[in-house]
Each structure stands twice: as C-alpha cells, then as structure tokens.
Length: 111
Length: 111
Image 1: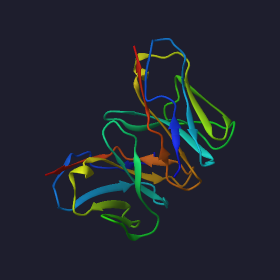
Image 2: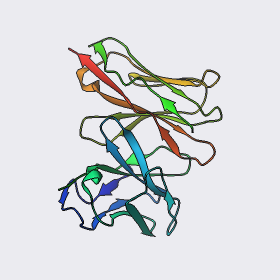
Image 3: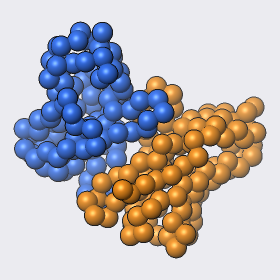
Image 4: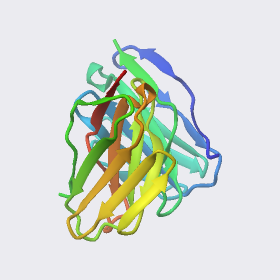
C-alpha cells in the first residue's frame, strides 16, 4: 500500500512564526499536492508538484510556499503564520492518471 | 471554471437500506472519477474509481457513471452505522489532469 506520511498530527504555532509541514511518500509518485480543508469550504488546493524541483500554484497559494528537492518529499512552508491559516492541512500523492492517496493530515492552530 | 456538485446533506438512511449519493460535473471531457470517504477528523480515503460508462461493483459499493448526463453516483447496499461519513466526489479535469473536488455529502446511517 502507498503510504503518505505527514510529520505532525497536531501543531500549535504563534502568529508570525515560520512553519514547515513535511510530507513523504514511499511509492515513487510523480505528483504531490498540498490542500487545506475548512468546514463548509471543502478541499482547497494550495500548491502541487509534478516532479522534483517543479511547483505550481493551486487555488489559494497566498501566504504559502513549497519545496520539492527530492521526489518523495514535498514540504509546505508558511512564511509568517497568521490566524487565518488555522486549518487542517492534507498532503496527497498520486501516479499519473490515478487516484490520490492522502496523508493523515496536520491540524495546525495559529494563536 | 470546472465544477463538481454534490448535495451537502445530511442524507439520513436507515441501517440495512441502500444509500444513494449523487454527483454532477461540468467538464464534458472528464474521463476519471473517484469517490472518497472521510470520517470526521480524518483524511479522505479512496473507496471507488470508475472510468467508463456503466456500473462498477466492489463489495457493498457500486459506482455508476453516465457521461452523457455528466453524473456519477455511489450506491451503498446494506448500509451500516460505520458507513456514516462524508463522501467526496472527485473528477480529473482533462486540461491539466488535476482533481476537481465536490464539497461532499454527509451520510448518516441510523441504527
């Protein structure tokens, strides 16, 4: 089974902090994604990557950046955390044309 | 803007009955369709994928696709309380091969 591992299940950070969310997948998938999910708003795509060192903006990239230095790892960076970035963050990977496999999610609270 | 529409629910179904979840999509050339189940506080889990018109069965689950009418549905036979969750429909957009997500239907199975 494909495994997508997110480094933290719960995080609490202070406003203005730089926050790193890590995601690792073990099935050599080309495509990786970062979503946030908020009640009533569904899944919203932040950034995605087709391959190493490639990144594309999703629907809500403002306030975020990403890094993909190795194929298996896709990091989401909050440069200066704000309270409106309190959310559930979901990482996913998939092979070309296939369905997504999600990590278990990171619930981030910014205080 | 490509869209995937689902009734948000909640859809309440008695235990043992058939639960029917529906999804419509706007991208006429979409080829790949997915159903995900998401328990509260957890990440989405892929339960069915379907690529061609007709029915696809997997245990108690049946996915139905009608490309001419642009809808995909999920039937759950012999519904169990453990089926209570939010069900997300997702469609691959042909232009960039990204998944477009519906907002999900909350299903409640009443004992």
